[in-house]
Image 1 (cartoon, rainbow, N blue to C red):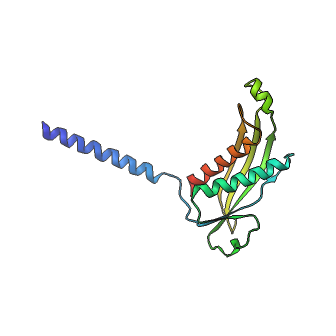
Image 2 (tube, rainbow, N blue to C red):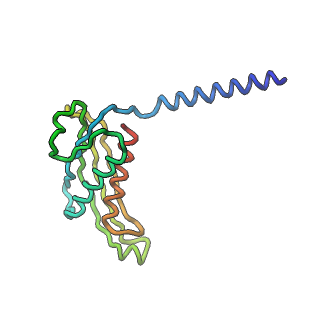
Image 3 (cartoon, rainbow, N blue to C red):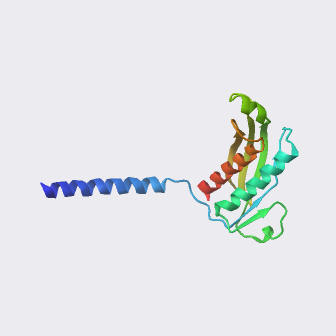
Length: 164
């Protein structure tokens, strides 16, 4: 009887390990690159205040660096990027923007939200698309309006961690 229990335990363990192996093999593929160049944020048909545009870019550069996924992170126009053999480019296009009010958020929880919607694309030099997704940044309850740009950058960092 003890031998039967050991056998059952062994079979259950094998099934669990096999399922874990299958789940691990189904994760999204990782792209082995060592450098990324982050292009300055552009706005589509959206009126975006300059302070938001700069904050989006600066927070994005900082958060991508913090991921530790790349040996080198180049800014838009920075020298040295053209010499990288496995460089990827990160482009971002603001497709939606609604500036809220920090005062309205403090008074009520249903008004005053700041929302930013950005199309984020990461591609190789030969324009092979690796990532093409919308990333949102918003402030709904407490915080200044520019906090939405930080929340957007955190979303980009999460996207980078998942794919690289």
